[in-house]
Length: 105
Image 1: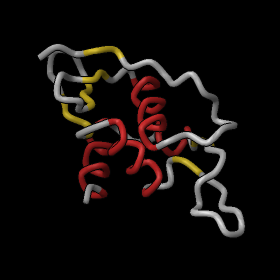
Image 2: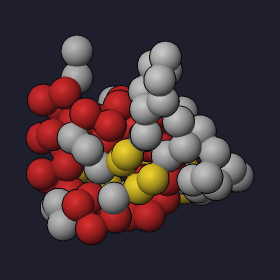
Image 3: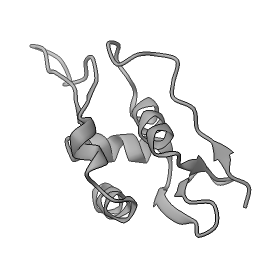
């Protein structure tokens, strides 16, 4: 299995970030990698599957309140994205993987 380094997106948090871009930011901050099948993997020797995709990781971040998107009147709740770093960084890789699996449809 070839793992590819994940770089953060070119856009900042002051703009709207998609779930995939949020997942990209989280994965890059932890040094996680992207596998051939598009899943997010932690570790290089003992590979731990974190999420089936960057979008799934971003969706779990929203569901678990690791990010904040202020709602506006008449909005779908998306908006400028703010990362709750302390809340996310307090979780271990295995905890993150469990929470992502629990929020998957």
